[in-house]
Each structure stands twice: as structure tokens, then as C-alpha cells.
Length: 500
Ligand SMILES: Cc1cc2nc3c(=O)[nH]c(=O)nc-3n(C[C@H](O)[C@H](O)[C@H](O)COP(=O)(O)OP(=O)(O)OC[C@H]3O[C@@H](n4cnc5c(N)ncnc54)[C@H](O)[C@@H]3O)c2cc1C
Image (tube, rainbow, N blue to C red; front, side, top):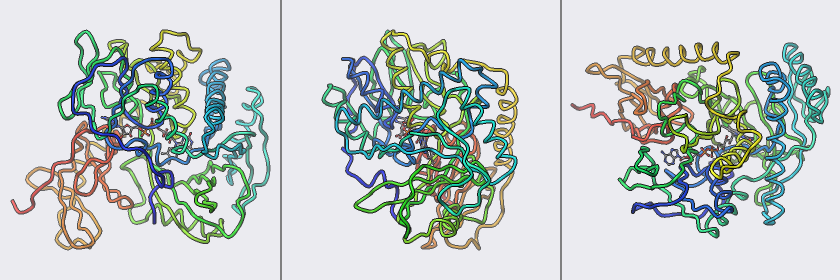
């Protein structure tokens, strides 16, 4: 099967940074957040340098499902309870403006990115969640959101009720962002790929140091790497958790009935469609779990999604499969603003909770305003240093005890034998006081790595679906041979020679 449908197009390549540079703003991370920030800043005449560790748009942005909506799961009832009416209205309004920005930009540049209005629909088959949908519908009323409860959706999926938010949208994110990249270049912006930022330092200017020992000096730095590659003692590792989901692209014998769907029961299911090479491809997502903590050891998330698809979507053909992850903050609102008081000119944009198509737009506008010293109505709402006692504290304690548990558990939970390992399976074992992860590939070749995450030392766990070692603490991922796939880690896992 093919990988992500969004990467099944030509995207420009850029060379590695092999000199030191000076600019106005350095942006680290070439996903939707970094690209839109670079676009908006360069539109305002500000010089930008964008650094990407791998290839542009090949992170979470290239593996999303790209619904463009303010319906972010069941959230408005909870936000009203914890943040009050004014702040919740601001959250909703910022998302509506973000949708409008994508629409206006698409029209302005005539971008063929399938921007298309669709209703967004949450649904449930559980009585408990039916109650939640009703509370959410009441929240819509308080916030003047156009939507209503329905008792059917156009699939044979068992259902108690559904909640529609009208006039939302979907698009093809990489077709859209390709044009944004062209505009950055037209505006004089510079872009480098295969360039990993490893540290930040100060000397009159802010210095971003790269893995190849080059420096980019600037007045401001935007960290758009999802989990910040540089934390500057702001403790993001204790305030966010990564969660991974899986997506299948399929064709069906039926015509797609319209709409973008999200199940609020477990396991969650997400459904939308996209046109690709004269075919209608249905995107079916789900099987979400905290990264590195996939509980159903002997099952495969893609297989579970396939069995759901076969049951309800009249599948003709399976064409694509991919997985990706995003971070959730303690109060569900992203962190966008200065890293902390010590680093006022270093900004972060993260914690989009799988709703980054609009949240990245909110972030790019907010960061552009902060850098240009302009007012922005959403500055306080998204600022990363906020502290809300409820529900932060409870989740803070419970998530950190979970991280501690994973840290300790990983160090102890090892097996002793690997000699009889079946092909295409992995185990961990303890060897000379060190935990070794061993994967035997389909050709019977054994790959052994030290599974200690090179970010902060948690113990990585095996993900059989992706053949990767995933860190349960902060979401770094490494391939079976230890090569880094996703940060915040910037170094590979150490390979182990089992002969010594
Ligand atoms: C399964 C799934 C489905 C989703 N569906 C939707 C949806 O339908 N609608 C929606 O609104 N949102 C959705 N999202 C969320 C959305 O896709 C993300 O929030 C968004 O793509 C994040 O974009 P980003 O630019 O912040 O991060 P990324 O796209 O991950 O970009 C970060 C970039 O930083 C680079 N990088 C990392 N470290 C360094 C370093 N040290 N130096 C240089 N570069 C570095 C990475 O290589 C990467 O390219 C979904 C998320 C998931 C997981």
C-alpha cells in the first residue's frame, strides 16, 4: 500500500544549510505552522530563514486528515466550564477566522487544493456519550454556533445520536502549502532542508545552532517543531502528551455521501473523502493511543481499521496507509507565544490536539503579530505560561505519574530470550545492565539498539505496526535500527553489537 496520499505529489526540494547566516526571524520546522509563519512574516517584508530537519511537509502535516473545522471533538462544553464564556467565544472565533483565512487565500491565489465546504459531524452509539453530545449542543447554542442534534448519519454504523456543525470545510493540505512555499521564496525567504536545529544560544542576537555546526543569527526564533526541540527550562515535557493515530485510504463501491465524521466513542473513527487522480478516496482514521503505549500487543491498528471499513464502508480497494501523532496540552488549548519569560524572543506553537489545520493558522497570525509588536485578541488565551488550576493540576499529576511509570517500567520490563525470535518481531532484554531492543526482520537479520530515548532517557517501546521504537514520554520515534524518525530527540538510538 502507498504511504500518505498528501505526499503523493511533487513538493520542491531544498538544499542543506552549509554556512552561517543572519536574518530577522529564524523558523525551525517546515510543517504547516512553520510554512504559514514564514509566509505571513515575509508578506510583511520581514526576512525569514526556515530550517527543516528532513523534508518540508513530511511531518504530521503530510500525514493529517486535513478537516478544516472549529468542531474539535467534544470541547466547547468543557471550555465553557473551565474558561468561561468570553474565552470560549475567543477560541471558537479564532478557529472561524482561521478557516476563513484558508478559504480567502485559496481564492486569492486560485489554489487548486479542493477547499470545499462540508458539515462536520460527531456521533455516538453510547448513552453516556449521547448525554455529552447534548451538553455540547447546548454549548453550541450559548456560543451561537450553527449546529444541531440529528438521529442518523448516511452510513450503517450503529448510532444513538449525532451533532452537526454546519458549513465547515476540508482541503488538500500539501496542494495548498506548496503554493505558500512558492510565495515565501517570491518574498525573498530562504528555506533549508536536512538541517536539524540542535540548540539555542544568545549573543546580542538569538543564535540557532544546527547539527552541522552552522549558526543562524536573528532577532526572533519560532519553534514550530511540534514538541519544542529547545525547551529553555519551560518544562513542556511535563505539560503535553503525544498521541498517535492511523489512517487508511480506500475506494468504495458507493458514492461518498458528503460530510466529515468523527466517532466520540472508543475506538474513535474519523471519515472524510478526497479526490485523487479521478478517484474518490475515503480516508478512515482511528485507533488512537498515547505514543509508545499501544495496549493491544497482538493486534494491528491497520487491521482493526480495515475490519471496521469492511463492515460499514463497502470497500472496493485499500490504497493508502499511514500514521502520525500530535500533542495535547493539559487544558486542551494550544501553547502559542513566548517560550517563557527568560526567552521573550523565542516563540513556540504546539499542542494542537489533532486540530492543527486551523490552530496553525491561529498560531502563525498570533506569532506574526507578536514579532511585529501588534495587538492580537488571542494572545492571553494561547499564551504558554498560563496556569489554570482545574483541570491542569489533576492531569499534571496523573500524566507525570504516567511518564514516571513508563520511565521506571521500561527499565524493568525486559525479557530474557531472543534467540527463538520469529521473523518480523521484536523483544527487549537486559544485557550488561542495559536494556536492548532487538528486532529480527523478515530476512532474519537482527537489529539491536539501546532503547533509552536520546531525548530525556525514557525507555522506548516497540510499535509493531510501524516497526519503530516509540518513546512513551515525549513522543520521539526511531526506526527498528535506531535511526531517528521524529523528535524531540535529535540523536539516533545507539546501535548494539550483540557479538561483543
Ligand atoms: C492522525 C491525525 C489526524 C489529524 N487530522 C487533522 C484534521 O483533520 N484537521 C486538523 O485541523 N488537524 C488534524 N491533525 C493535526 C494536524 O495535522 C497537526 O496539528 C499539524 O499538522 C501540525 O503541524 P506542525 O507544522 O505544527 O507540525 P509538523 O507538520 O509535524 O511539522 C514540524 C516539522 O518540524 C521538523 N522538525 C522537528 N524537529 C526539528 C529540528 N530540531 N530542527 C529542524 N526541524 C525540525 C519536523 O521534521 C517537521 O517537519 C491531525 C493529526 C493527526 C495525528
